[in-house]
Amino acid sequence: MSSTVAEEIQRELIQTRDLGVTEEGERLIELQIGPTHPGSGHMRIRVWVDGDIIVRCDPDIGFVFRTIEKLSENRIYMKAIPLVERPSLLDTTPMTIGYINALEKLLGLEPPPRAKYLRTILAEITRIASHLYGIGILAIFLGHSTGFMWGFGDREPFIELANQLSGARITYAYVVPGGVRRDMPQGFPDNAEKALRYLENRLEDWYRIFINNPVIERRLREVGVLRKNDAVRLGITGPNLRGSGIDYDVRVAEPYEAYEELNFMIPVAEEGDAYARTIVRFEEIKQSINIIRDALRKMPSGDIIHPQIARMFNPLMKKIYEETRRVKFPGLFASLKPPKGEATARVEAGRGETLFYIVSDGSPKPYRFRWTTPSYRNAILFKYLIPGHRLADLPAIYGSLDYFPPEADR
Amino acid sequence: MASQPQAGAQASQSRSQLAKALEEILPYVSSALKGVASKVETDKKSSAIVLEVERDKILEAAKTLYTLGFDHVKSLTGVDYPDRGVIELVIHIGSYRRGLRRVMAILRANLDRKNPRAPSLVGIWPSTEFQEREAWEMFGIVFEGHPDLRRLLLPEEFEGLWPGRKDFEIPGRKAGEIEEPWK
Image 1: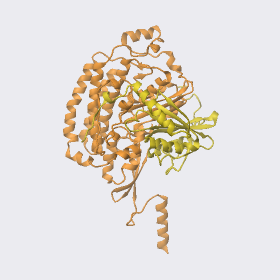
Image 2 (image 1 turned 135 degrees about the vertical axis):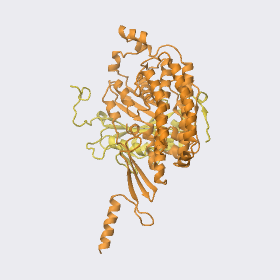
Image 3 (image 1 turned 90 degrees about the vertical axis):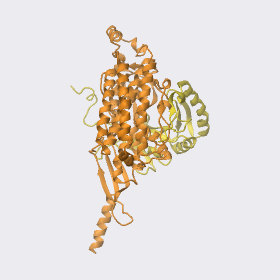
């Protein structure tokens, strides 16, 4: 009798803790990975393992949920510019471009060509920095410490480059409605060329030590295979989608800023495994180098802010703008009231497509501010991609997805 | 490694071509959704087709859009209008197909604010699974038929209902305090 009671208790425990039983009658073990994750941030991955095979995976996100949407709805439009940069610290400019594009659609403003090119250049600089960061994180997940150090080290020239252009290392707040905040400093094209050449040389080293490294290859090849139709079904975006053979990129599908005038390719790999995703990131860095070169070559001259806004400058602002090519905000920005309506803007950020949907009711604050980020859309992969793999493959898959928890939680 | 690069400049569509594509796709969508959508219009700024449907026609409209080739959801959310007593469900749907990827479809439906219920679209677009969980915890929209409707972003111990709605008060703070923390 006692055994039946014990069995009953055990069965109840199994049910209440949501544990399954394998065919051999053994219990599945629930493992909690996180929330203080030794990698790239704060999320909890609950996995149920049978031996060391993962049978179920439940990503528990939201540990760095900052309520950006609600905060933006309680602030004036200008205050949302630094706010949208915070969640994805390595990839800030595409996010501000997305927000400002949506705002410009509401306002009916079209920035001057030079501003568009400057925005494009900064967006590509952050894309390179973001990919290098992602690759560095993947490297340390695989125990490849050199890749981690190199990734963060090679990011440095590009952060410096962005610093020269915008005056800040990470959070630039460079894009403003109708233009950009500062013009390109003298000598910037030469410095950019230096940084690009440095990275081109380094990429050869990267291929030698990382991509063509047999250990890395074995850890990543045929691991975490995302098939084409699954990628579409789950709405995956960014390099993860292109690693599965779909050449979708917002820069081509719905070009914004200066992309329609620039020459670049969309790298695609067919395999869909972790290795393919990593290679796509490296190839994208090469394309970003091309884009920056092409944009610097084709850079038009002229204003960096829409004349309609420049007309509102007071004499001091005008003097500063003419002497140093810096934009000071006219008073209008403090009480910017877009007309009633709504606008959607999509932009290709480093990790994929980001979408802004803004509803304006004619007041100085957005009525509704909706923002989906690439990591948010890719989070579903943890649930559907990881089961079936060995526990030791989890870091490799996690790293290859370039998932960034703060960006997903917003 | 089978890299199939696609030339950006050649494949890229200029803005005028985007508007043309929108005009080309619109008749197909509006004829397919005849009798389902109460309003079909284009939003040229956002290069999107905006569809308004009744609550009980959401599923039908979603199925039709799926067969037209709109294969994933980019954003699913609610917009709260307390004065109208309505929560608007707004779904941004996109496609990865070559011809359709230039446009988005925006599906909108009004839900009753007192008891917002909508059919779950996970069966049609699995990409909505986490987004529906977020819309539920923020706006209280119950998605009927969702396999796993629980909190996504909010902490387990969070108290208070529907923080995405307009009448939600941020606990412990009065209006204006956030704007001037130094006072």
